[in-house]
Image 1 (spheres, rainbow, N blue to C red):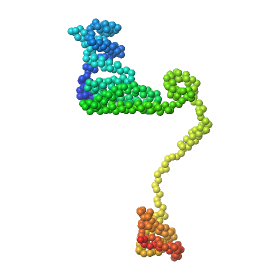
Image 2: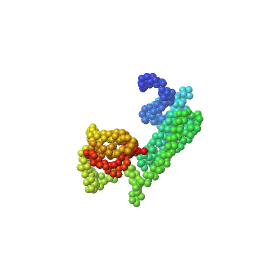
Image 3: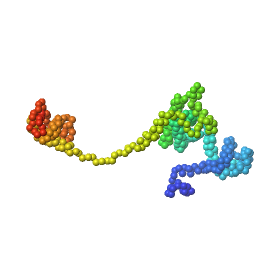
Length: 416
């Protein structure tokens, strides 16, 4: 563990990390893969070739030097010795000095089993098939790896995201390709469904692994729902195809043909269709005039318009006549409030020193008992709430006043 210290931050002990300890415990088997895959591609390929040949003889797993030379007679003798020496130094090939034969080590057998599973999966979806096989194998022997379940769940989520992106692209070609891929990997999804069903029925399964299995089942159900979505989306796109006359071809056929062409063939097909500069033959004079009017006049008019808000200003004071009229209303309210609870002539209540004041007071009497005004605030509402009402007013009487000649014979009466 001391050699790993430079890879970590100061104060972090690699021995306290569970992931490091797990890798360290499996180092005897991991070193086998290091021996196999260290070096150039050609060296790695020849080591795998020799190791697979050594492991292919199940009935007689022991090899004498003469059998090795005969079996690999098609290889260069110097290169073969180098490969065998590398396998012996890496612990993959064990020499039995008593019997004088070679045999594969335990780590070599495990590496060959893993490589056989990986190499045999080809075509549909190597990763999904391999991960499903690992989970199925663990379930069969009662030792399922939580890490294998996580890898399978991640792969299912990646496939679902790819299929969903193809649907959102609205591209018929991408949707068809994704539908074909979904059909190709469906057997692995069905196989993993059987494994997950068996896992969820196992009472001895830990809570974390049970959660992983349920998440895998959910991801599988989402992928199952995509099968119908592909069909509906393709049917919708088929309805939007454009048929090219009576030729029997559609826009999809034309797009498929163009997709298969190279850049050179596309250039030859275009021929003289491309111009070095645009030819706006599709524009007519009225449209050109409208565009020119906007560019030359309307755009400049918008730029020249002043859309700024005016500066703030203090509100002007109230005018003097409004203040005087409010004072007159208060004076009328005081006069009417002091009236006795008896019938009072109108002249006694509203007659003032000037004609304007008298007319203003007379207009305020219309507010007496007004239900819409009495609920408000202020002197006007106070006038409306006075227990008075107008009566009479059929005739006119003469008034001895310098500004008012006559006045209505109405009277103020207490309101019941």
